[in-house]
Image 1: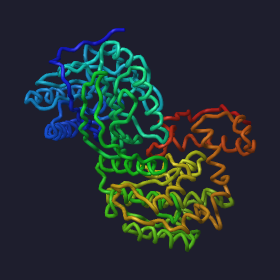
Image 2: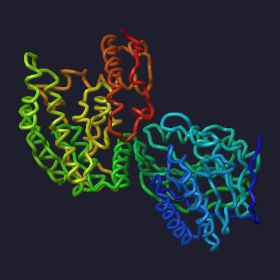
Image 3: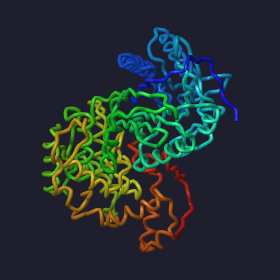
Image 4: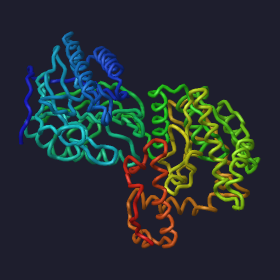
Length: 564
């Protein structure tokens, strides 16, 4: 194994105070991110910290995707790092800071030790992820296996994110004398992630015999949400510190050298949101940051009286506050009185602006224009889609006039099967429900009526009437229509879709579990032929292992079918 060297060390220490900076950077906002570094360093100095650890690529924001290939961006990041390094000459805390770094004509995902007015050491990420939402092999060069960084007499291993997921990097660090591990991460949320992270961290601690601080980014970046949930494990696998998920925190940790090695003093262990509560918080976090980081003054939602738009409105108010959310009911002759009443009750409970725009004049005008061309043909889904497209046009017009972003409200069950109208109800800039199956939408509606995230801006208590949740779902595009006219019951549909999408099970295996062969074949066909719609869908929050477009990238033109 080869190891990188550094040029800084001092006399051995018996104590090390490390501030863990679980923060929310913004991709491309170098000035804003470095301002966070300075503010955090000042806070850590007040706490007596020796060292502040930041998350992966913090100066640039993460993930940078192809932005990081831009030479001007690379140069701006380097200037920011050099300025921050010079500022450490004041005797305050040193920084372990992530940034893109060009050396020898190659671009690396780097962590740099800034201390005593200089860049004292540099380490490069070795294991570049190339799956799901990650394609770092396209943009970065893999670094050599690293050795530890000497700081105040302590030999610190700094594996970067994915470097802890395979044993080679940690083995090299342990063999070259590392005494503790500080691991900066940009690990996005998904429902299964906590068990996965814990299992990996425990494995590395057991293999190396070294304590490990796992620091993770928090906040939304397009479709990814980073949940934080940073923690410290001691060498005996005990949990010393646990930071909350979905919240920024700067936490001072105290490390002491004992006869058998370094140990982190036990500190606060925050409870984590899990399962549906974590998914809801992820959706709110992703929506908040998409709106705030892109500079939208607010959002507008088509409120239909159904569960999807009601849940989307609740999330929007929790994310932004009622004064930044406008809901619009757009009734037509198929809209039931109960839908009108339910939409009004949701708007009233959430305290949002609520407008009613009847769409009959628009629908009838379009039908009149098309009448000569459609003469002699029966009414069908074409006329139904006109209703959705008039609604979509009205919402986009409101967006243009008032600069509010349209939130689209389709769930993963609908996107999977194509049960949505292009340039109609699929219109919008962002979709908080994109990765939630319909059965989970129902669960989250009931959840929100009894609970909300600690920092949610919306009202407490029930905001979605039970009668709205309990009624049969319907698009209300024709008389007496329900979703189950076109789709299987959602409990059955979602069970099959989960196997097809999340697990990629063969159709034969799904049938072997007891599902009707004809039904599985039908669902698989709907999934395949709707790819062109999904490719045009708005971005939305990832909560499952496989969100469409980022994790599951299928060709639109595709003749392969498992069934006839």
